[in-house]
Length: 335
Image 1: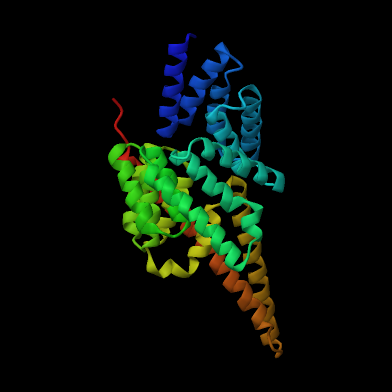
Image 2: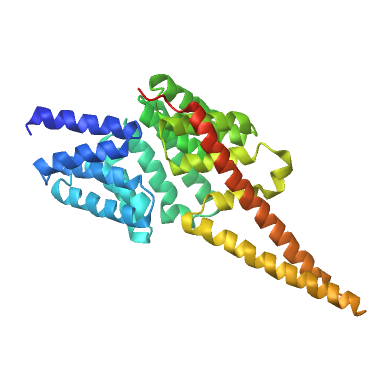
C-alpha cells in the first residue's frame, strides 16, 4: 500500500467512524494493518473503534492497542490524543487519570487552536484527582478553568464531530440550549450524523417534551441501527409520554440501563417478591380469622415493592415493543 492509498484509506476510515459505522471503519483499518502491522495511526484509529463498543474487555483491549501505537509513534498527535481518550474510557485508577491529564495537556499545548484537543483537556481536568479532591473556592476556580477550555473548544469547532463533542459537555453542564444549538449546527454540516439527533432528543426530554424526544431518537436509531444507548433513550422517552407512569420512571430508567442478564434476573426477583407477598397476605388473613391482629405493615411493604417493580418492568418491556413497531415505520426501503 503506497502513501497515497494509505492516506485515502485513513480518511475513509475516519469518515466511517464519524458516520457511526464502526464496523466498516474497523474492517478498513484491519486491512491497512495487514499491509503494515506497525502503522501507528491505523492502530490508534482501531483503538478508537474498539472504545465505542460496550464492555470492559473491549475497552481494555482498546487501551492495549493505543499503548502499542504510542510505543511505535510516541510523538504523533493522533496517537497521543487516542491514548489520552483510551485512558479516559478504560483507565479508572489514579495513575491512569494522571497520565490522561499529562497527555491531554501536551496535545493541547502543541495544538492550542484544535477544538478536539481542547475538548480532551477539559474532560481530563474534570476527571483529574485534583478536581475531585478540590473543595470550595479551589474547586470553583478549577471548574471555571475547565469551562474556559470548553468555550475555546466551541469557538474553534469547525466540523460536525467537534461540535458534537462540545455539545456532549454542554449536556453534562445541563446547558440544554447551548447543547441543542451545537447539535443543530452539526446537523446543518452533516444531516446524517445520529449523534446530532440523539443530543436534540436528550434536550427535548430534559425540557419535558417526550413526544419530540421520541421522534428525534427514532431518527437517530434509523441512522445508527442497533445502538444500545439510543434504544435506552427511546425507552425513556416512550415511558414519559404517560403522566400516570411518572412515579415509576426512576425504576424504568434503572431497568433500561441493564444488560440482558439483568433483564432476565429482574422478572425472577419480581416473581419471588410476588410469592412472598401472596404468602404474607395469606398469613395475615389466617391471623384475622383466628382473632389475632395481622402483620399488615409487612404485607403492605411487599405489595408496594411488587407493584412498583412489576409496573416499571412491564412499562420498559412495552416501550421496547412499541419502539420495534415504530422502527418498521421509519425503516429505509430495500432497493
